[in-house]
Amino acid sequence: MGILFTSEDIIKATQGFLAIESCREFTGISIDSRTINDGELFIALKGDNFDGHDFVKEALKRGSGVVVKEEWFKNNIPRGTDKTYIIVKNTLRALQDIAAFLRGKFNGQVIAVVGSNGKTTTKEILADILEGNFKILKTKGNLNNHIGMPLCMCQLDKDKEILLVEMGTNKPGDISDLCRIALPHIAVITNIGYEHIEGFGSLEGVRESEFEILPFVSTVIVNNDDKFLMEGLHDRYRGKVITFGINHPSDVYATNIDLREGCTSFCLNAIEGSIDVESKLTGIFNLYNCLAASAAALYMGLNLEEIKRGIESFQGVRLRFEIRRLNGATLLYDVYNANPSSMEASINEMVRIFYNQISPKKYNRMIAVLGDMLELGNYSIRAHENLGKYLSDLNIDIFIAVGKRMKYALTYFKGIGYGVDDSTEGGKILANFIKEGDLVLIKGSRGMKMENVLSELERNL
Image (cartoon, helix red, strand yellow):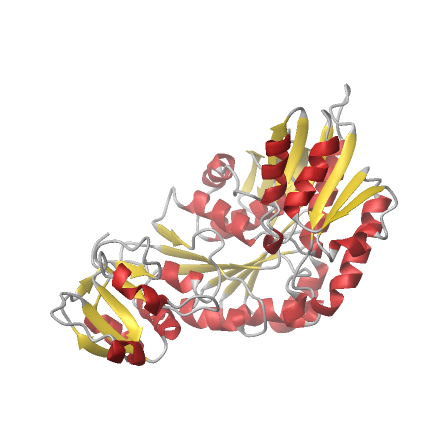
């Protein structure tokens, strides 16, 4: 990568002070001394459990300069250095200001993906579609917060035509803050569900937070089957609205849907025509992600053939509803995160796969290994209790409840159930009785480290 900015640019963006200038030009930004590359500028961020200022010397072994706080510099004034030192009041704000500075020089389109579930998958499908026609920069993985998004934006150069960002929210004001940095033109809203209720207090609070993007964009692409989303949107937004859906008349919609294990085929319909598509993803929730990405791609001027190629080439996102095999059992491995909405969707997909099997039967039992859903605040106990009732109504054969909150679900479960404290113990319990022909869902919030269930299962079989 070539030169992205100069020390003069950094001073202009951050209103900082150039203490020492030895290197004037930089190829990028880093906040990790272990992975910084030659020519990059290190920004010393301070977190709850770390302080980047402790790693400045390590970063400067390869990096060309640093952005630090004044008190650190006063105590560590270098002698005879060939590196650049820039002093700012707040290093996190400096990172965000640099991202905003680069955004200010960008003349392309900015697409932001928000919503309670499906953001990362929708963004990645859309990126696969767009990359055949545009030079794009996308946020990596799920780096969608006040650090991750601006850090990715610091790679924005003059050759890019589209900036595709994912925006996450934990509390009111988060989306507004991210929008002031990225200044999006187009919003894709996947859905509204029970995410981070602890920070919002209610489902209405979640919706209001996602809707913080509306004043910034001229076009919004929305899930027309999400009644709660659409009701709020009609009252709040007067710009261009493009809808996608399955159950309600929409601008972009799917027909002839065939949900199978390991793939989904459907007819993609729009005003431009229709085309048959076969995605490697499974689950109705992933069909909605495909439709959201298709609607955005159509708006960007791509044709149906180009969209079909992008969807069909997409391999999926790691840790999100992967289908794995182990000793004759099938694992639905969906361990990246969980909230009540996504948990219900994943359980429904397991049940659909189980009951839609054709003769001869492939699956004999349904087993749910579920970890706590975190950040639900006062709604937590009721959400987990409701989950236990839901599992019973669906005739799940065995339920392994991982974590103290999930034990509330266990008390309402009528089948065979086990309560364990952590995911490692959950894997050990599962290893004791898993059999050939079992269909197993493994899911929980990120903090529950549900990937340990699979690791322990593999270790004990």
